[in-house]
Image 1 (cartoon, rainbow, N blue to C red):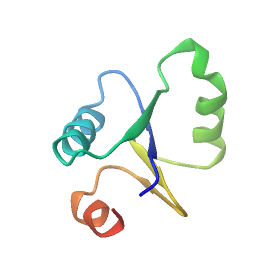
Image 2 (cartoon, rainbow, N blue to C red):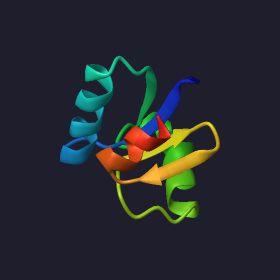
Image 3 (cartoon, rainbow, N blue to C red):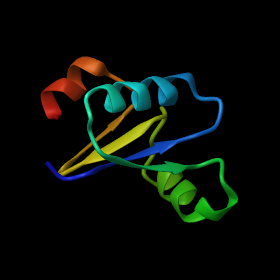
Image 4 (tube, rainbow, N blue to C red):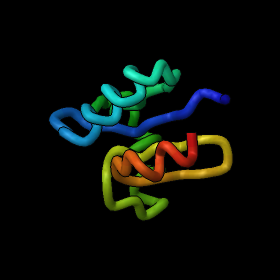
Length: 76
């Protein structure tokens, strides 16, 4: 499995839940904090793509916005 990328923000409960879930399953991921100033490009990507919910999870050929455990289990 390729590493997934997650877009998160500070003080996001679902983002924290997602990280705990991925860590409990030993799934590698790259986390990009949209609250950090250096991630302006990622914030623009998030807005331009029309995502409404955080976290945004990107895998090999798929993207999910929001933390949906059942859907993630199917995709992973």
